[in-house]
Image (cartoon, rainbow, N blue to C red; front, side, top):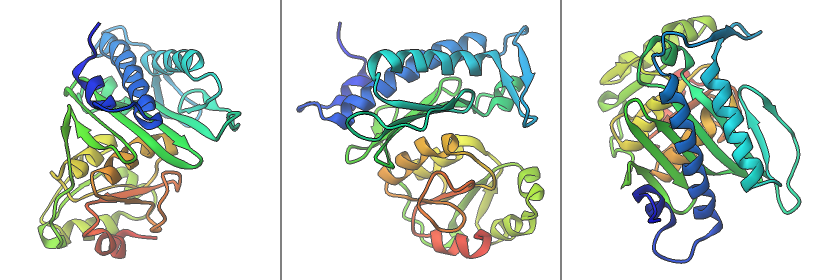
Amino acid sequence: MSLHPIRRLAIGCGAVTDASDDLALALELADLADSITLGRYRAENLRVETKPDRTPVTEADRAVEQAIRQQLAAARPEDAVIGEEYGGAERASRSRDRRWIVDPIDGTMSYMRGMPTWSTLIALSVEGETAVGVVSAPALPRRWWAARGLGAFADGVPIAVSSISRLDDAMLTWSGIEDWDGIGRLEAIVELGRRCWRSRGIGDAWQYMLVAEGAAEIALDPEVSVWDLAAPMVIVEEAGGRFTDLGGVRTPAGGDGIATNGLVHEAALAIVGR
């Protein structure tokens, strides 16, 4: 059977490296996730529960993470897995520290309401460095992916951040107003919006992909977890951008995040940074 065009691009025409082999697996996991999420998307009988942190979770969230974990157990039995719905074992593999980081549905509230901006996020961290990332948004339908040293792609096309260097010319994308108000930082995000050319409240992983594609210059979140940012981080960086927490530290695990084309990063942090 011939490889899917995405799989051929991920592997390339030369010898298969560890990174491209892991990326090919991540893309297969995204295919699996898409088949589950699309099957229940806009279903009238979709089951939704409230988690202890008062956020919603659907049957599709749990089914996707279970399926991905089962596939990884077969394909990479020595690797650790951490996911939004079922946590993760803090262990290292026998050969090296390898951890898959999974958000089965990023944007569950959008998924529940029938908005197409949700996605599945799959990342692989190797020795503390995010090495592979896939963001799959099948209802848009779009898919983005990257691996360290192999570049970033959207639907098979290489992508790169923009060359805009001034906040006055920058497009800002941000999460919901209630998120910033909840942490007492509403005025900061409003001030950043005033300084930018335009702003849009997009939220979730899609806003980071717009930065990676060069359609926007800034995307940021006030409260997030590592599974929200690990995959977007490697894609933005491989597209030439910069990704840090709001304290300026390069990490997907800082509890908040900001991605830019790199050229306006410091200027944005000067306004919204902590």
